[in-house]
Amino acid sequence: IQMTQSPSSLSASVGDRVIISCRATDDISSYLNWYQQKPGIAPKLLIYAASSLRSGVPSRFGGSRSGTNFTLTISTLKPEDFATYYCQQTYTSPWTFGPGTRVESK
Amino acid sequence: QVQLQESGPGLVKPSETLSLTCSVSEYAITSGFFWAWIRQSPGKGLEWIGDIDRSGTTYYDPSLNSRVVISVDTSKNQFSLRLTSVTAGDTAVYYCARRAHDWGWLDPWGPGTLVAVSS
Image (tube, rainbow over all chains, first blue to last red; front, side):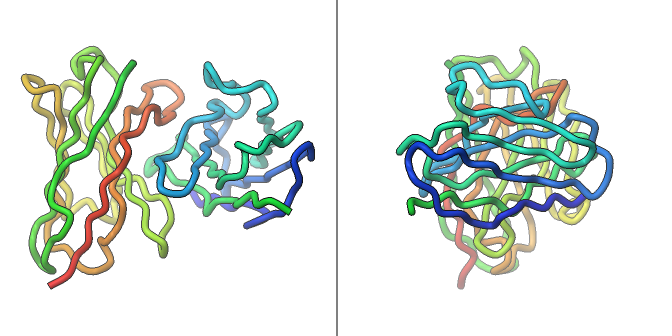
């Protein structure tokens, strides 16, 4: 199963609402996870099962599903949210990641 | 809280074997979960290599299957990766992580270790 993400990068300002899309090439039910990665640091889990927030992750992060399309929303962008975001499907092995979406400061 | 730490050589020669170990603290490997290896290179992004459960059952990416062995040492609370016949294409940051049985999420991850394949 291939995962695509759009956009590949975006520029945003603190306080903006940011939406990142992820699409699977086949049905993955809700087996979709989102990770945040900052330069030189390992990815961190944000959301699992498409819309469940990992404990300790701020509530401004949210996830949703519509068929094979998934969305990560950051309701109000904070300075610490500038990073690269990856989606990952864990429905069918091999578990595959999207290519990432880089959120940059405008 | 659970912590993972990768260790191993940072430089491997082409055609040789890459060997890494992941040490797990504050959680017994035998308690459950899968234990995974993932790598990240500029050209290929994030790539799941494989994982192992507490009984030693392994799951590998088919594209690497013939070259990969993941093993677990419960006495040391560690699990290991061996990747044979490496090429420059195997140069990457290698991460270990805990993978959930139900939804498959990876959390936490180790800090990662850069392995370069070069003569």
